[in-house]
Image (cartoon, rainbow, N blue to C red; front, side, top):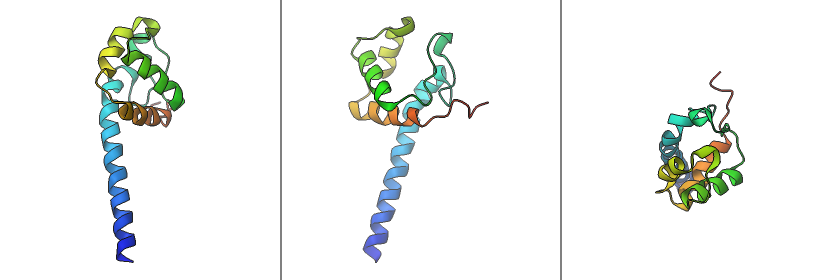
Length: 105
């Protein structure tokens, strides 16, 4: 029984730490996109909150590789995501997919 509780505890702590790391990653995004992805970056981009994770992964990867320049923000986005690992991008995309653009209203 103790082993089961220990396993549950470790999983819970791991989940909390992963969420905290992802939240820290998103802070870089929030400056332009808003706390809940409810803002257009520099009044140019689409809203990102709630966007499907697979779309965000595709776009962030393309920005990172210098292959995307939506809204003329390619260089800014390349700088923002250039140091993210594929794992970071996936976690960030899943976080963004769960944002509610209406939460800030």
